[in-house]
View 1 (cartoon, helix red, strand yellow):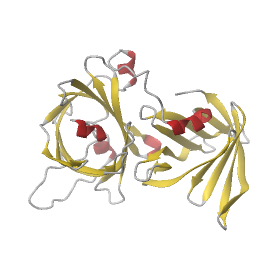
View 2: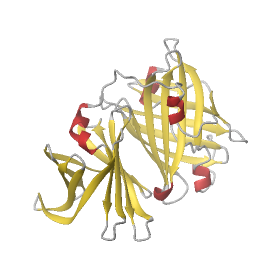
View 3: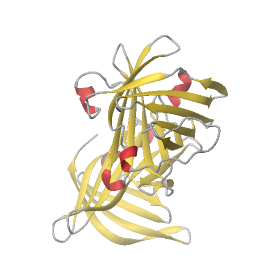
Length: 337
């Protein structure tokens, strides 16, 4: 159904329980429960126009951030062309009893969800805003088979653009032997839409795309940063890691930059093991200089060439940013899209 382009037929690394007459004690969500659907899944449906749609989902885990990730693709079954995508970042709340997720889709919709788990049954309640700033919401109920190779789900009480849907037909997904989505592109099961254009705001960030590294005084890597496009060209994703003296990842996070549909402004969301938040945005100071705002600080990046940038922090005082704290140099080591 058209209404479900807001999120795709598959939403999240599920964690849901079927409604009961009274509250029950939920399972503590361990890493094992959070990752029990890891891998690639496949399902099928038919839209309102009678077209057959293939649904591919990948569930994974970012170990150093204790963060679950999901990617969902809707694909035209005849042409194999990618129609839309959904990207979900999931953490476990401080109580350990529920998941909290940040949701983006390729049409520019942004939302969040909360989920709980009871054995093989899960429930997710989601809410967000689409690109005309109209709120959508609903509930997804899912049940995983005992052997973990099939799942069944329904969408309930969905409200979108003033339309209400009590429930969708029960759908089935099955786990594939593939462990990542890249093999589906390599095999021709999914074809990218070459005519789709990236969001206009991303032109200002093209120089950042790729993998960058900073080495410390001993020549070991002190910081790793990778910027890439996501959401079929609707998002800029930054993943950064801090490396300690033992060459181990000691911290890091993920920043997602896109247009906030609730206000139409360029916005940055941050995700780490403690959850997610709207954390800031960008100042496009010149062709060679960007300012990345995070709370009351700003990261200045100045390009010295295509593969080198100088980086330092500024603090906000009396409404203005100033300073050159913690200056270091990043070197590009790989160009990626």
